[in-house]
Image 1 (cartoon, one colour):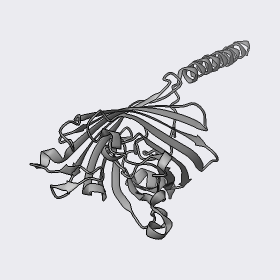
Image 2 (spheres, rainbow, N blue to C red):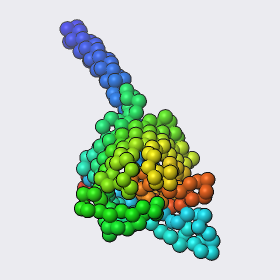
Image 3 (cartoon, rainbow, N blue to C red):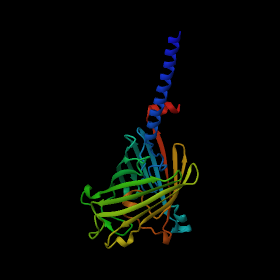
Image 4 (spheres, rainbow, N blue to C red):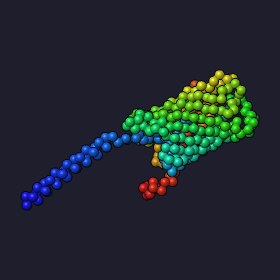
Length: 303
């Protein structure tokens, strides 16, 4: 009987030792486990420009972007710009959680745009920022010989001259549950410039951020400091500034904003902004984003 008691006591001690050792191992693993930051921004667009966010795998975003005319266009003639309208329709799809492909069509200059976004680095307990690469192209499909709002006349010899390209590095940090900031070094290349003495490359440095006012409402702003060059029309273009609100309602994100840029793709709002806030050349607009899931597992979880 004593032998059995000794064996039983040994087994209890061994079990207790194993449990303590296992708990120590689990605690060490939890201490070194990487936690990634999520929801730095509510949408893939801040206002006019992109954010570091990408679309989840097998999810589709449908974007409707709308800009009215300038508020200084008068009440009788233009009802403070509400009689005018520019629109962009866009689709973007998550090939993976970190890789997004998108296309869109703008009524301004009848422009088609296409792009890729790749989230290369994610903010975590060990990494201070999120870094996303963005490249896009745009094709102007207006009849050759049309006149821009700047007064220049564009004549295309072939379809290649209609192309514009953009590359950005989006760097953002979520400082707290309320505050997120982002910087956007940008280069835009025009295959054909509007005047001969204009540079083909436009360099810009963007700054943006959001501040959460409530669980579903945030205040957003973005500004692009742009080198427009010293050509004969460069003085007509200005830096883009936009201020607005994000309203999140489940599968929708509503973005309401004011901006001195009428365009909704990079070539228009970074390189070709004609409006000035000081002259009340301000355009009221909105973006609406609706997300659709093609992931059967996600749908089953929701059901």
